[in-house]
Image (cartoon, rainbow, N blue to C red; front, top):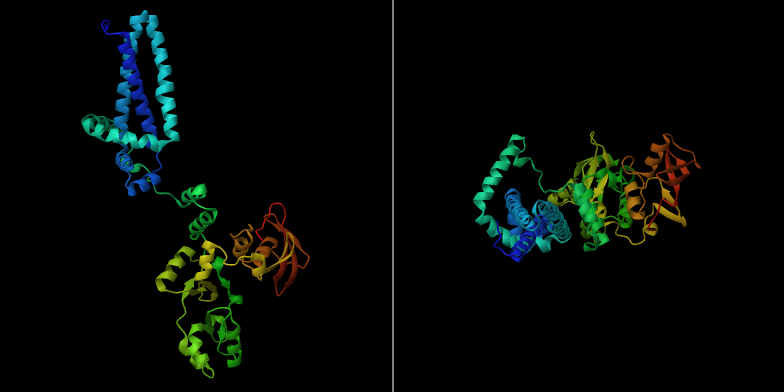
Length: 425
């Protein structure tokens, strides 16, 4: 059989079949290895090969059916051809040797090598292959359709449905991994900003608020001279106005609106009340991502945080949320933060009311933030008692010494940095 066909023709045809097998194997790996997000970017940019590849991947069952159909047809043809040549040259022994040799050749040159190349450079292989597969799929569509129909029928009997496959949407943690692995494509600064945005959902207004006892506001029960002095030396542009205590807020005052009044001889309390705007209250525990949207929707920049009983717990501003994303607006953290004073290299005096998240962000520390909000709260949480001055403890590798404690809370503590605790300051 085939005695009239020259041996060189058999070998040439075998080489062609092996090249086709390598093409089918490599292109399959390349198409399935494409980064779907890079692919969509190239599609939006108008890349022709990307558009064709994306079209094929929209129906992976048809694509795989076409590739496997072609690959199996080529490999079976190559096996038959080698069988004919082997029997012609060496009889039954030649057939056994030829079969073993073909298996090794296909494994190396038609499977492993092309698939490895395709996995390393998927776009270089997939996009040119898409130009071939699109018309080939149209040509062989009836055969591919029939093959897929039977394959999907088997999957249906096994209880598998097309809709059971997971989509390509990334979870927050998966997206964080993508951002962190972007490498040189995105600078470290922007990677940190992106991960901070992803963290907004896990951080609440309680974590960044100015606590109740530190709120600077105007008490209308004070003398007008004291109020004028407070306004003159205040660093804030918006102040809550209340009577007696902060829980009795009657409005918010934008100091810019005082310009016309102060340009005259003076102002009275009634003048202040006429400039007040309605206070904006938000419940404690509100995620920063939600609050940021609400600030934008309401065109507000400051909100009062209340608990379930309506008592004010603190104030959160738009700037507080933005600092969670972009970091502090200051350049020398240890020098500019009045709650943190550098004593010496590796030693810092810290106010007990200092916010832990802010300390971590400013100083690049890693104190725990899943419980207490302030350093005082963190120390009391660990010791479960109000400590005496001189008491020491270690929190997550940070040695802490109590320097001053009064009024049932830690007023001042000294934090030492060791080999596991670093700072940018």
